[in-house]
Length: 161
Image (tube, one colour):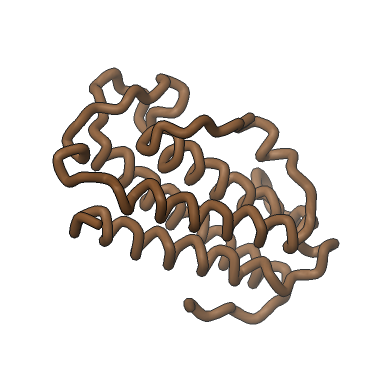
C-alpha cells in the first residue's frame, strides 16, 4: 500500500472504530432517543450518517464501487448497535481493499463530486486526496457529535481505541 493511502487508512480506522465505540453499549431505546436539544440527531442517526458518508466518499467516489445511498433517509434511520457494527466492519474491510491498491499518483486525479455533496458547494474540481481529506474531516466531526450525544444521554465518556 502506498504511504499516503496507509495514512488515510489509519486515520479513518481510528475515527470509525471510535465512533462505533460510542454506540456499542447504548440501549436500543437510547440509541434511537432524541435529545431535548433543537436540531439534534439520535446517536443512531449520527452513526448511520457517518458511515453512509464514508461509504459514499471512499468506496464510490474514490474506489469506483457502487454504493446505494439515500442521504435524506440517514436522518430518519432507526435501528440497533448490531446492525451498525456489521455495517461499520464491512466498511472498514472494503475501505482497506480500496485504499490498499490506490497508487500515489491517483491521489492527484479528479473525482466527480455531485454539487449537492460538495462540502462548500463550490464548482472547483476535487482531487482524490481532497475527497479523502473531506471524509476524514466529516467523519471526525460526527464522531465528536456521537461522543457528546453519548454523554448527554447519561453515559460515561467512551475512550478511544
